[in-house]
Image (cartoon, rainbow, N blue to C red; front, side, top):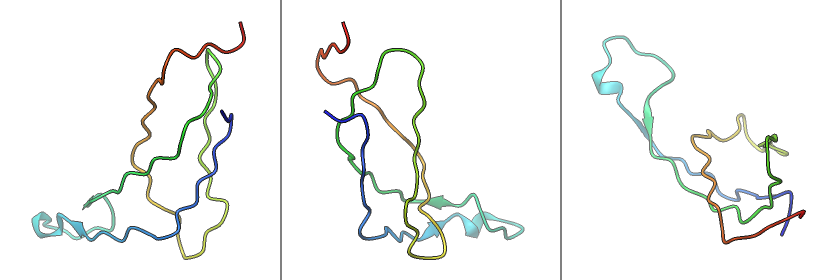
Length: 82
């Protein structure tokens, strides 16, 4: 298993935002948006504190993706580095 993952999002998820109809004053952010989940695979993490980094290596349009949540799930009883 890898200690690094690389994932390319080939097609953007252009979901419309909602919530503007409840605003008294229009603003540019904090509206509700339907996010799409992406399974990026499995990664080996060492026991203890560490750093996880998410990077946009290429930005083909004006902005990067809007990132909402990262979920990690323990898989099996893998023991590394005994």
